[in-house]
Length: 106
Length: 119
View (cartoon, rainbow over the protein chains, first blue to last red):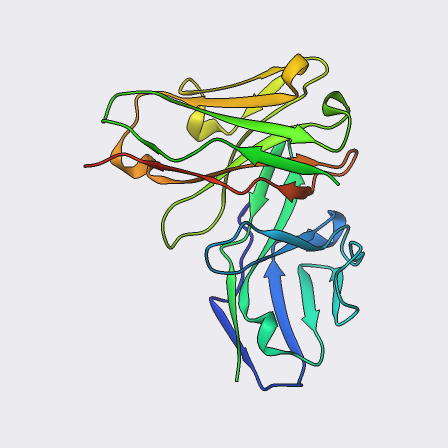
């Protein structure tokens, strides 16, 4: 399938580690990017090229990509990290987005 | 600082067309492709298409082929997205975003333009 599959929601206790997955057959062969979107705001790039952080993004955000799964990891989760997260890649002259994962910090 | 400023909200009747603008600043407009993405209320992100401001080359998602046109005015550092034959399910926030070649990721995004098509 060409779809990118994300869990609908992930919950994490304050200060703990959250992992958000993005699944697709052989996704490890592609560059995967992640965006954070808070209510009423445009998406913001938090990880590009699987694991690189744009300037201004906290080191608590990290990424990996191998096999059939790309993962966004949010370490030491804070209340400000509550948002919807989207994975994205470029394949066959088309942009694909995952369905989005709502991260809740408890 | 790179910034994309979009035009204001629109309300259109079914069957009409809408044209949204995206004005770039803080970089050389012709150096980076511009893409368009939309988001229906409460839904995820949906890619529409792209424009190379330097060459004028465009590409569209199959779903929008024949109904969308992206264009530019380099003198104004502005990209446009026109969507025709509007339906109620075209009601969405429309975003422009700059990509950083050669890898296609979006940074930054415009603030969004809300297009409402009453049913």
